[in-house]
Length: 133
Image (cartoon, rainbow, N blue to C red):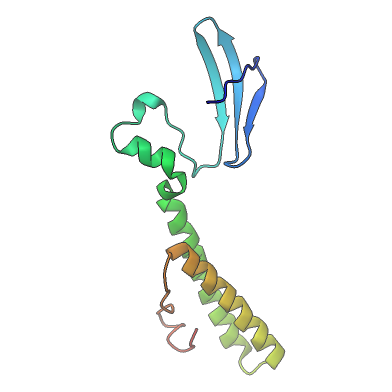
């Protein structure tokens, strides 16, 4: 355990999270701390972390962000649909443009596969059914 001394208004930076802990005030027997961190980073008081939940949150903070994963997956799906629509709107475009669209789609599909953790099926729907991804 790292033990640090800080005065009011001094901060501790956790660069890998990223988060900042700031001493708001210090009285005998009581220290008020402010924590600035991204919304997907869980911050719990020890007394609220009960049973199986505490070790999981402490060991795998990224696993506790299913909402973030869902948002990223939805945004990637929207990108794929937008690229498909752009491809349809361009029709028979220059081969260089088509190659650029292909490489962008490959990158987005790779990101989508990384987020979902496995192989990804092509998007389905009225737009995607007319154009193969």
